[in-house]
Every structure is written in structure tokens, then in C-alpha cells.
Length: 406
Image 1 (cartoon, one colour):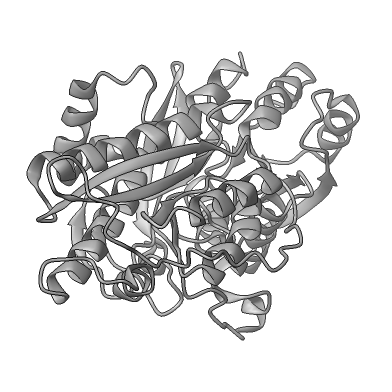
Image 2 (image 1 turned 180 degrees about the vertical axis):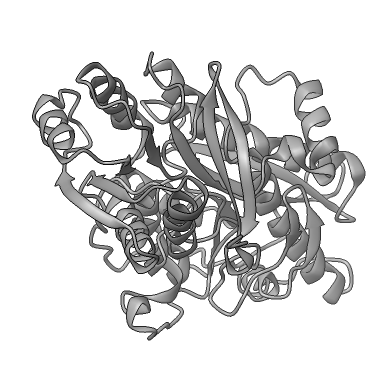
């Protein structure tokens, strides 16, 4: 999901730690301490999502410790706020990489932030696993559209499916389920928004839909009068927005106020309770999100109960389940490495944990968790939601490759 900028330059940031471990990481009870880093925007406009990510990762760590999931190991979460800024995410990664006890990082939320973190994590053999990044380039390279897919970083994984899947799902859902024939497409000029909008357009037009207009806005814009006028003149059946809820909330309301009564639709960047708070006329709008709503999954019952019992002040939001699974995947990789090394961590634990991630497989909160040869999740489930009576209500879920055309 969510990209706030293009990648920033990443210099030679290899640190001396490089995963080397000594005997000074023992806790008071004699157990080895393994630190899992966390990077997400826990302040700022996207903090609702970031706080849900932080809390869900903390829950996974707490549950692993309570259950003694890895014999002789105590897990600790070290959370950092990236403020949704790539340079801050890079700094956080550098800091975490300098701590030999850190064996992996859960996060980030934003794909642009991930781009700034990937090289640092690779140079330090430090696993980076995101519950929310959806830009295909992160795993498959810039030429994935030409079907020249090459894994970019062996240390990068994600439990969220890509915008290649999500955007196509949105286009097909709009055309075949909503019976939309004409769409106006707007994006926020950032990699996430542009990519999502492009995939939507490709699938929508492939099926016979017509794009009656396109527009680019700034993610910082909050006055959309000029856009509203253009959209109104085009008379679409649906407006699709590639971007995030801080801008799409006001955009939707201004469209409705300006006489454009058709729904606004977007991707997981819109799927947040804060979208509805920012938009008094959100009723009827649509958003897709990766996975299936955890409230509808039998596999998520324990997660929901545990989260409530933990007393977190903030909701787990859109990525709670996928974050728990991301953290648990790291924990399972550590477990495999410890088991293979006679019950203790090896000196090259980081490298071995990263390698072990490729073979991780378990039944998680969001369903079966495993990764393909690119580090992408094998779970391609997407859900369409609609705002109904002040809340997001799920309308349709499917794996895109199995999309029902009936």
C-alpha cells in the first residue's frame, strides 16, 4: 500500500554489526533476547494505520513470549516512528541494523518508505517484512509490467498482495459487479497511487469500460474545486482515486457537494475509519483492501480476542491481521534457525533467518501464510468494502485469479 514519494538514494550503509552475535544478549532469566524492529508512522495523518500495525506486532511478540514459542528465546519489540517519510524510515533501519540483537523488521506501511529501507536491510542481512506495501516493483523489479520479473532484495518479504492484483480486482469489480461503464480516474502522482490507478484502468478498459477523464492531484491538496468541475462535465458512473484517505476523504465530499453523486472508489490507501471521519458524505463510497476482513475469518477469532484483552487504545485497523502474521513469520523463522542449530542462535543468525523466511509456512490470522520466489505473499485475496451507515461494510471477497465473472 501507500507510497509517499519515490525512492531516495541509499548509499553504502553497511554497518559493522551485520548480524554478528556474542554472548552478551542474555536476559536475566538466562534466555537469549531477540529484538524485532517495527517501522510505521505512529504520528501524523496516517497514524491510525501505523498505530494498529505497532500494536498488532506487539501482540505477536507478547503471545510468543507467553507461549514459549521459541525455547530459550525472549522476544522484544523495538518500535520506531517513520512519520511516513522515506528518509526517516532509512534512518530507523540504519539504527536497528546497528543493534546485533535485531533479527528482523516488521514494516513499513508506505511503499516509498520501503524503497528507502530495502538496500540497508539487504546490506546488513536484515529481514524486512511489510504487512502493507503493495507496489509490485519492491519485489519484482521495475520491468514487471513487461513480464521481466526479477527479485530485487532477498531480505524483503510482505504479507500484503500487490497492486497488480488489487488494481485489476478494482477494475473488474467496478465493471462486472457494480456495472460501471464510464470511470473518471484521479491519482496523487505518487508511485502507489499512479500504479494502482494504472492497473485499474488497464483491467477496466480491457473488459469494455471507458475512461472518460483523468486527473493528477497533489497528495497535500485539500481544495478540489477545479477537479470537481472537470469530473462533473465528464459525467462518469464512478470516480476512481489512486491515493490515500487524507486527500480522498475531502475529495469525495467536495465531489458530492459539487453535484457529482456517483461513488468514489479507491484501494487500501482509502480503507480506514479516518476516511469516514474526514468525509461527511462518504456513504456509498468503495475501497478495496488486501485480504479478507478479519472479523469474517474463523482464523482471526483468537487475534481479535487477544487484541481486545490487551487493552490497546487504538484499533488494529486495516493491517492488524497481516501485521500479526508478518511478526509471526519472523518468529517462525527464528524458531527454525534455533532448531537447526541445536537450540541456540548461530553467530550468523540474520543471514539464516532471512534464508529461513523463504520456507516459512503456517496458518495465520489472515489464512495460510507463505511466500513465493519473489518474497510476495501467496495469498491474493482482496475484499471490496462500501461505506454504509458510517462504517465500512464488506461486499465481496475473492482471490483475483479466481474472480467469479458471473
